[in-house]
Amino acid sequence: MATAEIIAEHEFTVDKLETLFKRAFFSTSIDSDGDVVVQTDGPRVCVIIKKDKKLLKFMSIYGVKTHARLEAKHALANKLNDDYIFARFSIPDSRSDVLVADYYLPFEGGIPEFQVVAVVRLFSRVVPGAIRACDTNDLVE
Image (cartoon, rainbow, N blue to C red; front, side, top):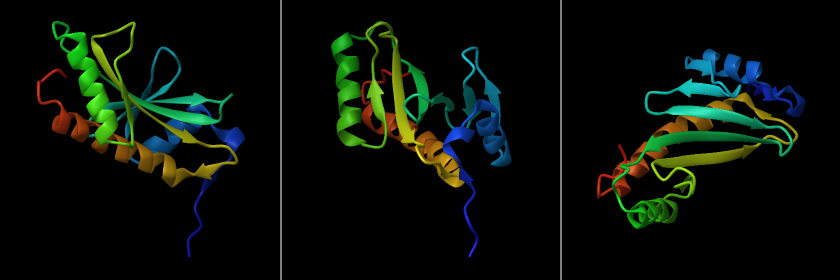
């Protein structure tokens, strides 16, 4: 039986994550905040290391029609959150022209490499699929 490669808690760095995603055949870049951006077959997924909380944050941002009523945007985020429990969806108070999808993965004590890659793959399928299924008013651009 093959053993899983574990990323120890202290090993979570931008360089480590970028190398891991490149080994899994993803294109990556580092954004202006120093976070890893993974280009999937679907959305770009930003992976942020929250060392103080021992969490990885996976996040994608979608444009939302600016002329749409705020109530309709919130209704969409609420429907997404009610129907899909894998990711959290929100319309930020400061930017009502975007829909943010995020997911947090704890890494306290270390986690297998494959789990980090699997989350990106699942996130990049579930989030766009959820939006397609719930956005009956074509709010997401």
